[in-house]
Length: 335
Image 1 (cartoon, rainbow, N blue to C red):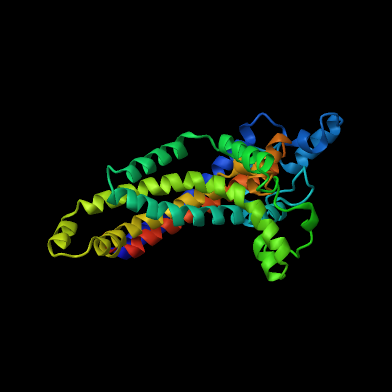
Image 2: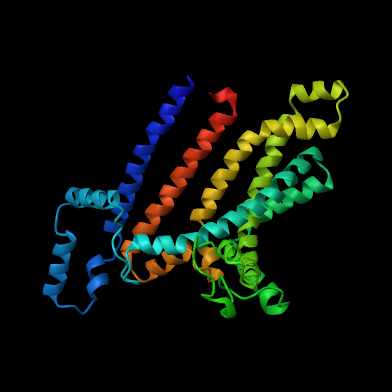
């Protein structure tokens, strides 16, 4: 039964990937942007436009174009960016580590604060802490990310001067750290350049804090809901009747049962951070994949837009599959 469920899950992966590639291809064909004009320019002679269209294969039927598109993807070729004149795969490899660093720090902060906050709110249901957590979660779901980002810059950077300005690193440390992994804080630590490390960490604090705030609100709400369901279970009532301490009941028994669905929540939230940091990266001038995608879209660089969209989709599908596999691995009831 376990192998059958695992096989059914894995069977959906190629179908999902095919749908993702097909949707990405169709987006590139229905948007009102001519990729040929984006390459050769609006004032190029008509013969140059036609020659470029022939070279790109855009004169052929859509099914043939799609097969060519799939073949290029299978070879790791996402085309060349008009904006940077580099292969899109090279650009993504350069910009993605910044998004990875930002999303990873944000999910760690959100998990460390959100999980215990949600558990304590459930334990003290109806109390002032529970009311405060529920209000906090409501604010996290209601407040737009760009508003919180701008308010953060205005308060901590412009008014109080506690935080550095937008960007990933100060001018004094820019391009001073050898790129090994692309994760700036890690590269600075590996280079033993602690000045650059603390500068990078200071620049990371604000955007990571903004992203963590919204993730924290969702994680705390889910942890609270899971814990409330467990605390009303019969085994908790039995444990209390046996005289077990409340701390042991909560953290040794109830929390162990909610850990499995919480892992799924954390993985999917992390996937959302990796794909949804566009506004945060734009506000804080964070040179990640989200900002690359935004700038490419504004410059009608469709190869870059489609390539980044496809990569983001692949990451989300991969992490979604990981969450499903972890759920099946950790919870024997669904095996």
